[in-house]
Length: 265
Image (tube, rainbow, N blue to C red; front, side, top):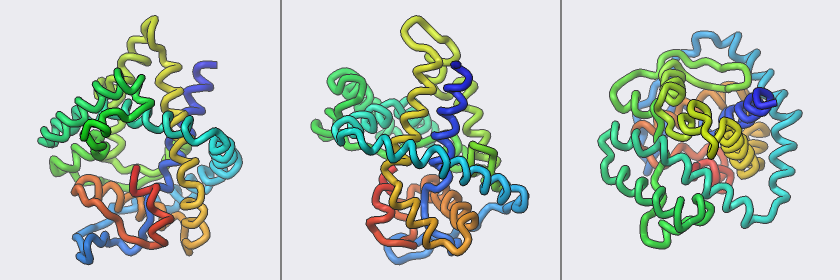
C-alpha cells in the first residue's frame, strides 16, 4: 500500500510540472529586451513524443479530474495547504541559496521557515509576510548546477516523471542522497514522528494544488498550441533558464491572466 501511495504521489507531482510555462519562440523577453537563450538538444525526440503522449493520457484520465475535485474545497483550506507546502520547500531552497551565494535570501527564507513553522502552525499561515519577510523564489540543485556553469545537456521526457534534462536529473538525484532534509527525516530515517507516508503525502498535495491552480492555463495552452509537445519542451527549458538567470518574467505567449498563476510558482 505504501509503494502504491508513493507511486501515485510522484505521478501527480511530476506530471503537473510537465506543463508549467508558456513560450515557443526560443527567446525570453524581459522588459522589452531579448536574452540569449539556446534550447537543449532534443536527443530522443521520437521516443520523447511517444512518452509525452502517454503522460498526457494519464493526466486527462486521472490527474485533471482529481484537481477539479480538489477545487471544490473551500479557499481557506486550499490556501493553507499551499502555504504549508511552500514553507516546507524552504528546506531545499535555503541550502541552494547558500550554494549560489544568495546569503540574504538564505537568511530571509530561514527566518520565514522558523516563524511560519511555529507561529504559522506548520506553515498553514504566512505570518512571516506580516512581519515584512516576503516570499522569495524557490531554488533547487538543478538551478545551482546551472548557476555554477553546468549546461543542461539533452532534453528528454520520462514516463510519468515528465520533462527534464541531464542537469536537472542530477539535481533530483542530489535530493535523494541527502540534499532534501524533509526526505531524510521522513523516508530515510522513518522515525516515530515522521514516516515516508508524510513525505509522499506532501508531494501528492503539492502536485494536486499546482494542477488545480492552473486548470484554465493548461487548457489554454493545449487549445492554443499547434504542437503541444514542442510548446511544453520550450516552456520547460525557458522556465529553467529563467530561474537560473533569476529573470522575473517569461515571454507572454497567451494572456497575462493565463500565466499569472504559473509565474507565481
